Structures are given as structure tokens and as C-alpha cells.
Image 1 (cartoon, rainbow, N blue to C red):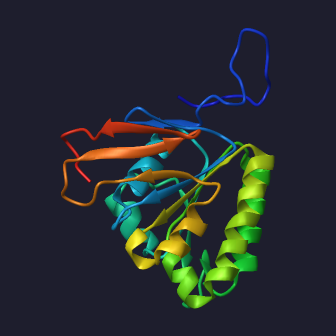
Image 2 (cartoon, one colour):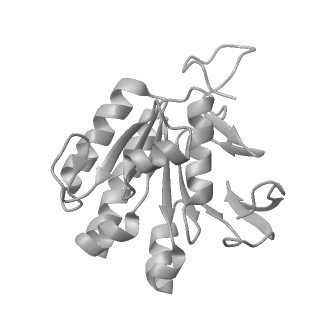
Length: 204
């Protein structure tokens, strides 16, 4: 289900209609989600589904774009590669201002839209934890103003408890049970903890 209009009319949709739905999970505009999993499988599945549903999306990732396009249905996706390699749609991980500018430009042109940020651990390594926390907070404010969505992928094992808590602060957290495990998916949405079973066809 996609929010087709930003206009709120009596008897029609609202600004809180999901921008995309995936396996019963509603992704709401004006929210920032943190997807915690060792490998960003669910993260990329949600982005792939959003492309199928016609959502305008920008993916910023450490993964090689052509590999993602071949592995997922991302032929029409806008992808920025975080790398020190010089090229089109490539941004050095230390140039957080350029990353931010790309997000600002995309949300201005396509709101409501979906911004996907993968490789946050790499950004922290290449900059500093404090710099990236400030960077995320800046994007969060922008997303709220533009009534769009930011989804951030992270491996929680790469941060200590205090750092992870700071990243999670003010974000809606989606935790997978781990690769190869058929356990439940825990989702924190609007302050309510929900348990949702993953479909048998694709376990995380």
C-alpha cells in the first residue's frame, strides 16, 4: 500500500498511511527505522518490495551497486556507493556533507520517499561515532519535515551497549532473530513491542 497523495481530505487517506508494507509490517512516513541484523537481508528485502510497489527510493550502501541490482529487484533504484573509488554515484565515506546533500536533494524532489542507509558501521569507522550520531540526527529531522522514511541497517554486534543505545534512541527498532534462525521478529513501533513470525519461505 502506497500513500498516493500528501493531501488530507475528509473520507480519504492521511499522512500516516504506510508508504510501503512488507510481510505485514507497515512502514510509516515521518519515521526513522533501525533494522538490526548481522547481514542486511530483511533491509534489502524491504527496499526491493518498495521498488515493486512503486515507491521512490534512494539507497546509500557499502555494497557494490551492480551486485545488489542483480541480487534484488532494484533495476529502477537510485543507488549511491560508499567508496573511495572515484566515479558516478560514488561518495567517499568521509564526505558526510555530500551524502547529506544527496538525501536533501532526493527528498525535496520525491517526497514522500524512502531513504535506505546501509554501511553505518563503515561510516563510523571512517569518521567517528559522534560525527555519525550527529549526521543521523540531522537526517532524522529532515525526514520528519519531508514526511518521508529513513531506514538504517546495522549489525548490533559491531557496537558496544552504550553506543547501540545511542543509535537506537528516537528510532523505531526492528530486530531480526539472526541469519538461519526461524524465531520471531521483534518490532518496536510507536512504543509497543510486537512479535511477528517470519514467513517460512524466507527465514532471517
